[in-house]
Image 1 (cartoon, rainbow, N blue to C red):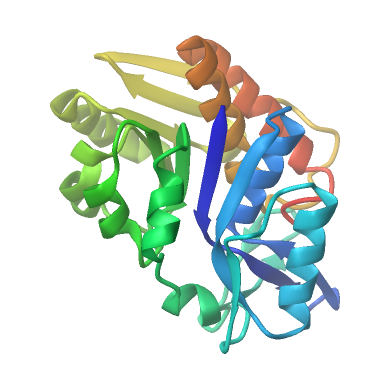
Image 2 (cartoon, rainbow, N blue to C red; image 1 turned 30 degrees about the vertical axis):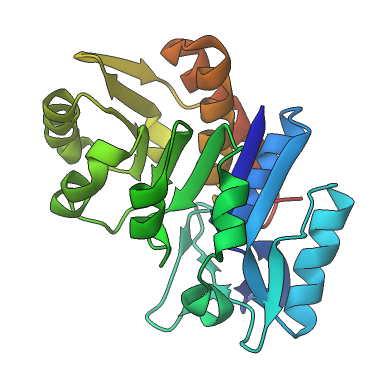
Amino acid sequence: MKITALTSCCVDIYPELDKIYVGGNSLNFATQCKLSGISNVSIIGAVGNDRHGVRIEQHLDNCEIPRSHLYRIDKATASNKIFINQQGDRYFKADSWNGGAFDVFRLSENDWQLLESSDIIAMPAGDPNLKELLKRRKDQLVIIDFLDYFTLDFIEQMIDSIDITFISANEEMLASLNALAMKSGKMIVATLGSKGSVAFYDKLSHFQDAIDVDEIIDTTGCGDAFQAAFAIEWYRSVDIKKALSKGAIAAKNVLGFMGGVE
């Protein structure tokens, strides 16, 4: 199994704690894939010529994730200011995100050719390369994370070219997500935080409870870990219940430390 994560690598800055951790959807996803026992995992993306870029490179090296297609460019490494409430839930402020290298990076023809040999490709919906990926995709399993700030109309425009749509949702959205899954014939997986998750596929709904933890330290990266574990199990077994369970376990493990990856 070969997995490629595109293209979000950043640092997560916790101003109130004076701490900085590596992160980003793609880095978190790739790291969870390695923790799940997948050896052939890679990242395509860009960082800046700064200390944050070095920190990301060091993390990938420590995880034995190849970075031959992680480029250094003359922009700041993307960063995200994260704040944590008393329940351990993260939240952002208006100026939290600085896209930097992530915002301007575009895949080269060599990068697109590399993707052709991947079995699974993962990308956040805010990636500037999203439309090009969906146009160029071949027989890979393509999963897209729509996070919690994209509309159903936006998802519907693209869902026909996506195999698994992930979205951080609330219970009020479930009926609409189910209707979209039935209309498109595609899989939609909604994560609901402490209320678990639900997968809509093949006219069925599959629910998974969240796994209890003694203490929630930080929810950052839970969705990325869930998605990686879910995608791997689905690719292996085509069993949604097993995939949801693996995702829940992976998400639970991330709750016990600060940042998206240890």
